[in-house]
Amino acid sequence: MISLADIRAAHERIRSGIYRSPCQPSIPLSELIGSRVFCKLDLLQRTGSFKERGARNALLLLDAAQQRRGVIAASAGNHALGLAYHGSLLGIPVTVVMPRFAPLVKVATCRRLGATVILEGDTFDDARRRALEIAEADGLMLIHGFNDPAVIAGQGTMALEILEDVPDADTIVVPTGGAGLLAGVAVAAKALRPEIQIIAVEAAASASFGASLTAGRPVAVPSQPTLADGLAVGCVGSLSFSLAAPLVDRVVTLGEDAISLAMLRLLELEKMVVEGAAASALAAVMGETGRAIAGRTTVLLVCGGNIDLTMLDRVIDHGLVADGRRWRFRTVISDRPGGIARLAAAIAATGASIREIRHERAFSGADVFTTTVEVTVETADREHIAALRDRLAAANFVIARE
Image (tube, rainbow, N blue to C red; front, side, top):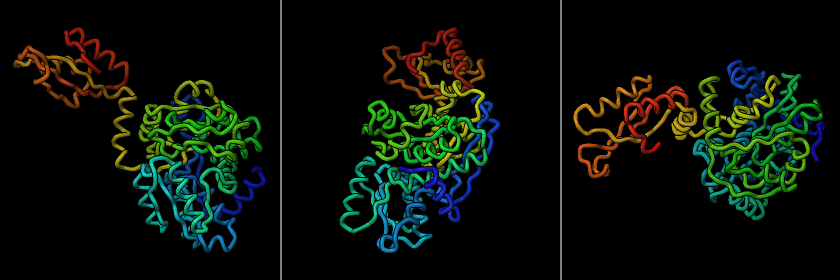
């Protein structure tokens, strides 16, 4: 088991090689949530995530022979990055096995840091099985990303820093996949401030922690693609679950719309480019959970910034749709002169802006003097969409599909 003493020892062990990230107040997020919100910015670590803490602690605890032979890990990205970076600093060879869906930026960065990267399987479990095979065949030490006591203790050092900076924190919101971060933070925070509330946040596409709480033991669940790829773990760790389960006060399970909207909010309000797993902390308190903690001092673990830039435009588009700031509909208009102008006038009357219009003449039916159009508009919010829909109806445009 992991104790506060283990986490304090880890903090002393790693502090010379880990950035002491700020935990700063956020005025715009406080206004958005209705709480006093602080953000623990571990996305500012050298490799862009909190995973460096556990990785460095685990590497420093190896004996000399293990350090010479090297280590291996299975990781969707951030644990691999942390091991690769600190392995290079400490002169320890690192091999990482990543599932094929791992973001390209994380794969490229691991290789640049000197790690041997193997892409294997469509799920994290596929990668983990391959890492086990290589570890046994080559005599490498396997460092688990979330079910290793040294890793969990390293991740828990975040809580020590949070409560130094925000000693009156009432709530800590923790993104949760394999539950290593959750376990370390919960153990330290509850030991130092027993009344603090720990909220675990998971993606609906890979909701193992919630299922495991219901079953009373670690349960594997099917993992689906998710914006929060760092949380895409098929089964929580047995050690991390046993530590975290009795200490967690609430579990929030998020859909993709909530995650993309939170990424958009952080980009707009805090000028932060974050990955989906990190944005999930904000997403968790933007709905019912936020109302439940209104007025409390809340710390969000914004703990990863390694988003693949090829995905960023898609995330923004998805977030704008989820926020009601982009709407697409189909309707039928006259294909005679003035038909498109009448539709454009109805849209402009509400203050909406046309982004794109596509005509579909060949499949619009028997009337050759009409055409179906698919229109994408930019709007202010969902109330604006409702007003635009009413205006179109008043102008006799029938919305065929949204």
